[in-house]
Amino acid sequence: MKRISLQLSTLLAALFLFAFSCQDHYVPEEPEPETLKIRTLPIESPTDGEYSRTRFGMAIEKLGNQAIKKFGMIISTHSIGSNNYTTNPTIANQKLSINEAATIGEHSFVEASFDRDEYVEVFYRAYAEQTNGDVVYGEVFKYTPADIVSIRVTNLSGNKAPIEVDLDITYLGAIEVEEYGVVYSYKVNVNDPVTPNPTLADHKIKSAVALKLGKQTIGLPIPGNSVIQIYTRPYVKYKNGNVFYGNISS
Image (cartoon, rainbow, N blue to C red; front, top):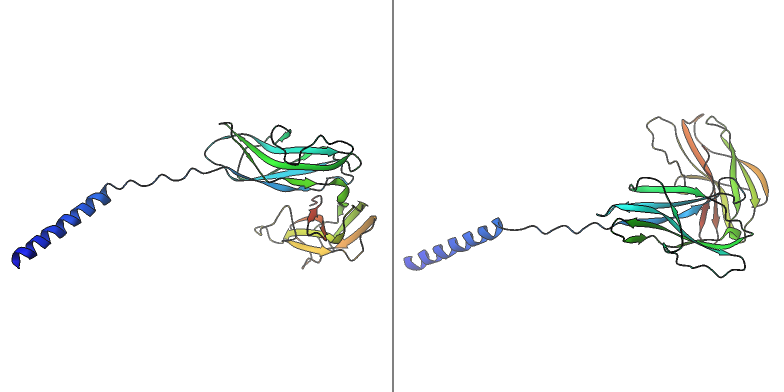
């Protein structure tokens, strides 16, 4: 019995030393290389009413392990009476490069006009070209100038009550509208957070007037007598679920 116990003890000690030796020489796995990830942002309303300027945007969500050489938007335009376009644009099509540092976050710029009397559709997507030659794309979006209501903020009364926004509607669009009005964000105290490009996730006031051409004034129900900072812009929610945002006023 003593011999068996001695042999068992020796075996256990050997197993312990073997396990310790393996653990001591464990080589950690290499982390997976990070992949560049970008996202196309929905097109925003023109800055001055009649589709003379249009704002594109994209977001860089992950930078990846390769440096970014160029990034921006790619567009393919379907002009009236022409079939020379693609619904899936690549860098072989028209590139609109953004001249900013390639940092994580949203990047945007204002491009020239897409007049509803000239263009049927505009297909656009984000792109980023890396130094090793690889190109990463965002999802493809479609913009139809004739569909979209032409609506803009022409005046924000200020930051003291009553705070009012003047809207001007110059074109009704070609698809059914469920509601429209103004979205806004504001801060009362210096250290309060505030969104410079408000959406329906912030505050909204729906217009009580049926959609029609012309101007109207909408009062913003903001508690208190004044705010330190306020951002407003019009929104249009269509019956197909899409939402279109207009110019930002602050």
